[in-house]
Image (tube, rainbow, N blue to C red; front, side):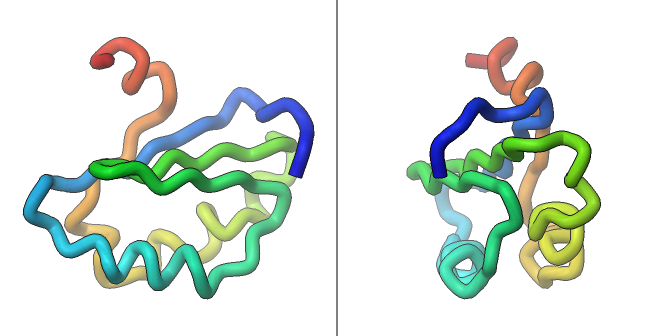
Length: 84
């Protein structure tokens, strides 16, 4: 999907010994609505193309309901850039 990402960009990080198979399984089985997802070694980067459609996104509707949600850290892109 091409286009410019909206202002809302998030990343989900996890510890080096966390089994990320549950996150990967969730991502591979999900249908995304105007979103882009990149899976890195210790984090998943999640962006939305259109901020006005945030409530329709997989990030908003489904991520919080996952069992692994309590085991990951979610931050916005501003926090990521400050800590990089």
